[in-house]
Amino acid sequence: ISGIGKVTEQVLRHALGIQTCEEMLRKRAFIFALFSSRSA
Image 1 (cartoon, rainbow, N blue to C red):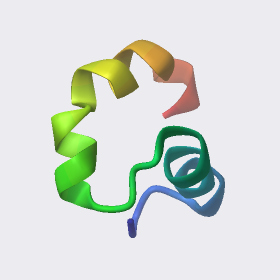
Image 2 (cartoon, rainbow, N blue to C red; image 1 turned 180 degrees about the vertical axis):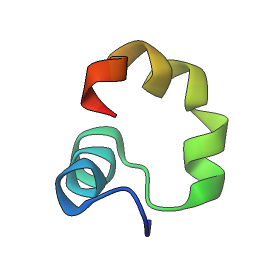
Image 3 (spheres, one colour; image 1 turned 60 degrees about the vertical axis):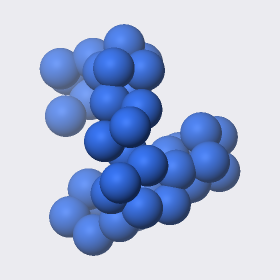
Image 4 (tube, one colour; image 1 turned 120 degrees about the horizontal axis):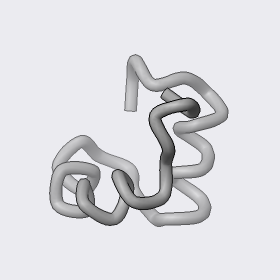
């Protein structure tokens, strides 16, 4: 997933199994709960 940074991409890919923007959109509520505004 381009544009989110290498570390965040690795967290999404390896910890949450998210590899595409579509998967990220499907799990957006879960992602929102995990990441604070400070990590943005």
